Length: 45
Image (cartoon, rainbow, N blue to C red):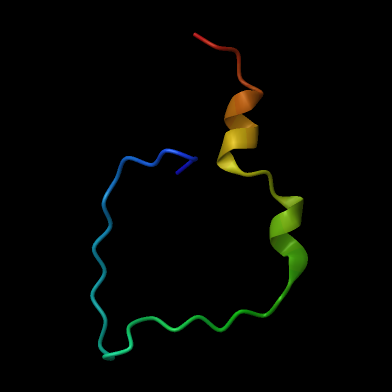
């Protein structure tokens, strides 16, 4: 997605509350580079 996303997502839910996250606090995401970091490493066209 990056810092300037250009897309639309439509999601349908069965519950009135929609999706309710159950976050665990696991730091796994800190080991995976984000989109902006990955694209910054690519040569510019």
